[in-house]
Length: 159
View 1 (tube, helix red, strand yellow):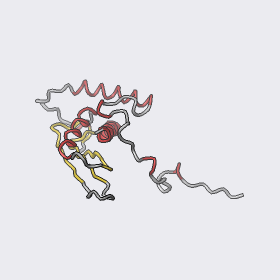
View 2 (tube, rainbow, N blue to C red):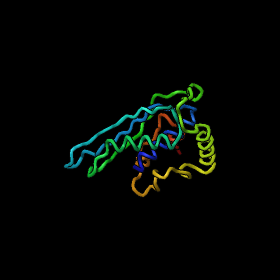
View 3 (cartoon, rainbow, N blue to C red):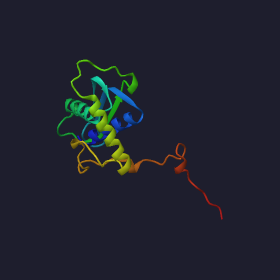
View 4 (cartoon, one colour):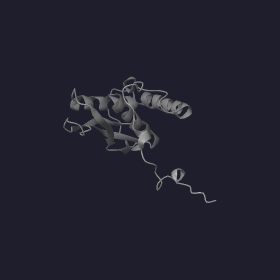
């Protein structure tokens, strides 16, 4: 759950950064498939009633999707969250029947983003994101991006 919650929180940060909101959340999980255990892959999509970029909404929706597909006893190697049905913040039409105080959520998200920008990612988390004891991102094992990132170009020095 921690990994999915962290991916969902990352999605919501990115949505706010580009001033977008998502209407749909897809969560997927899969096992490694290299051992005697058969490969398992499952995903679940939830259409939200109101487009949002709020971290708690997207994390909660992701948790609900994960509960639909999670199976006890399977060692999962991959998990992810994909948001879709994106709309610009300015294009969202308020819902008359929405009971949440969206303006308050927006102010809270803005404050969290400012604190995060000043102090670094992970300084403020939703409780379900945990403390990282139960999962580790494999990001440190990715290949360098020589062709797409100028900071990672190999330098050759001739003497």
